Length: 144
View 1 (cartoon, rainbow, N blue to C red):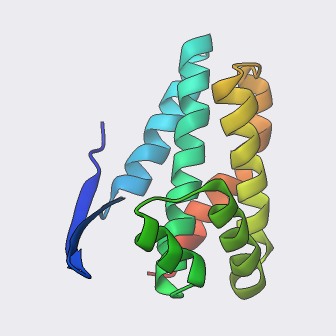
View 2 (cartoon, rainbow, N blue to C red):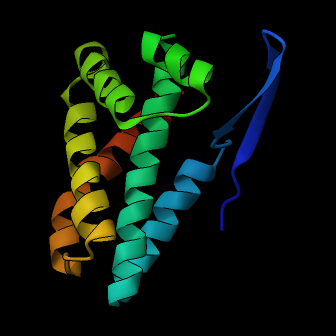
């Protein structure tokens, strides 16, 4: 399983710990999500949904930092991302980077809520929602 790296900095007299995905971790998480989905077992499907969501969320956070968005600064300040910060970030990134970000986020959020938390999606339904997320990863990797 991919391990998250931590970025530690001293800011304004306090230590900040802000988890970040490292180099190949986005691709690793995507591969793990695909493998879990292929198993087709209820618990594997739920875990796959959460990994697809996490991949999308991490890309959004990375882009927010690259663009130095106000929401990224706020997340740094409070030490975590909140749903309202993510939603505002997605809205801004859609305007700057394109609709794929909004489409992937909408699909990822559905997988996160209905697929992971409520465990109400089957494998075929999940397959219907992962295309934009996979496309987002391809787009993200190409721009490096």
